[in-house]
Every structure is written in structure tokens, then in C-alpha cells.
Length: 152
Image (tube, rainbow, N blue to C red; front, side, top):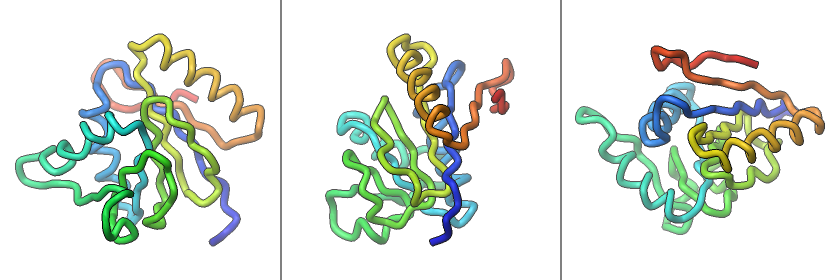
């Protein structure tokens, strides 16, 4: 693996929910030829699991759980602990989960709910901490029309 620096992108949910945004981001990730690791608490992963199978009438997002057989074969892997069992290039952090080491990824998405003051405060603190550590950061927010715009 090259010594490339992982880009860390913060996604500030203001007009859409995680359930509306995450499948599209995962689809774009797969479209790049990348695999994805989605890290979050068990309850959130339980919610996302069926969503990815049914998110569109005409398609689904194949995925598996880290605690199931063949985790290494999954294009999208859902995990509480975040071990990169599927060789993912993209790491998705949900509900304040700790990203851990990000060097082995091309991109890390930290997705947070802008309507939740606790999540917003935690994301701001994480941004400051990562910026001070010299991470390559980007901040994305939704336009009034719901499109994503890079704001920082």
C-alpha cells in the first residue's frame, strides 16, 4: 500500500437523515471500485442492515456484517469494532464512533447529525483535534436544495 494520506471528510446532516444519505455515499464508493467499512454502534448497524438491501426498488447494496462468515468478501462491511476485514478503501464513521487509525484508507467519512447538539459539539471537537494533528480535512454541508457543497 502506498503512503498516501487518508482524506477525512465531515458530512454535516442538516436537511437529510443518515438513512437518506448513507446509501448514496456507499453507492458512489462502490462506483469508484472501492470497498467500504461502516463503523458504528450495534443499534445503528441493525437499522442500516435491512436498509441497504431495500434502499431502492431497482437495486440493493450488497453487504455483510463483520461478525458473520465471509466478512473479507463483502464490498460493504458493517462493524462495531472497525477492523478492516474486507480491505476497504473508505471508512464511514457513524454516531460518534471512534475512527481509530485511518492510514490504511483512502477516505474517511465522519457523518454527524446537525440537529443533535451533542453530535455537533463532538464533531467540532473531533475536527479541531484532527486539524491540530495535521490531518487532511474537508467539511461538506447541504445546500438549501439538498446538494452537497464543500464548505471547508
